[in-house]
Length: 171
Image (cartoon, rainbow, N blue to C red; front, side):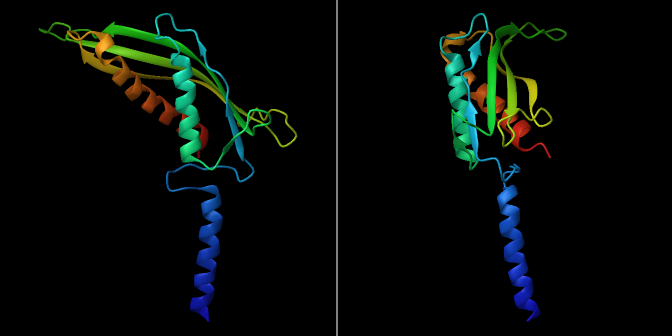
């Protein structure tokens, strides 16, 4: 009898726990069902054409594949807005006795995470505004255009993970 009770309790507890938490470490309010990623703005001076669209698609894909949330552009529970702020290539400073052999591509995004209450009003306590930045180092002898797609993919993968973690694993 006691074993049956413990088994039943374990199953119920795990089902309840699964509704709020996942093995990936994210926690979602059970009432949060929908999301929307608004068009990102491109405020970066020298970024490739349509990089802001690539950013938006990457964030949409991350949320769609790693949460139970459903895309909704009319009445979302949470919304992401943002802009591409920087897209810069810099030479990394040489160290003693060395010459610069590394260039660094850095992408910086400004993201607003907006949470709506059930009545559609803003929940300012749960929302946030934050900058996210990541880089890709490459040999100074290589032209950026030959590795640009690879670099952007690597940078965006980390940026999407950082944004996702801040939005859904802030516990």
